[in-house]
Image 1 (cartoon, rainbow, N blue to C red):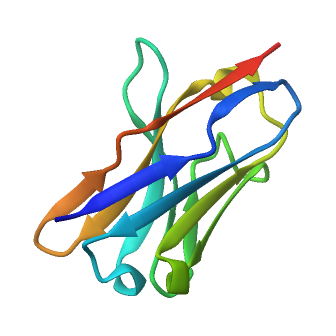
Image 2 (image 1 turned 135 degrees about the horizontal axis):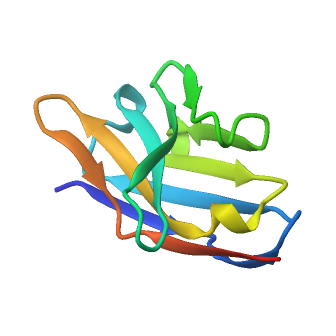
Length: 116
């Protein structure tokens, strides 16, 4: 059973930073692409960043240069370092794992609120 547990969300002022963490269990972590999505109130869920098992990364244009995704396979953990946060980054952030033949699995989400 895939479990993804996020932490690190909270309230921060514009220009500040947060680091989200996600611990995965029930999967062969090192072989899976991990990622982060976010969903703001009244909006569709959107992809923020992904990182493959080999360390290749992808970022949405809206976060390039501000967010960094990383992983520590020995800890089954993926991180999202978020710098220069803006009010438009306010959303629930979800950790994801892409599982072969099973699709994308989502965690329960962690709230990030950026005040102006």
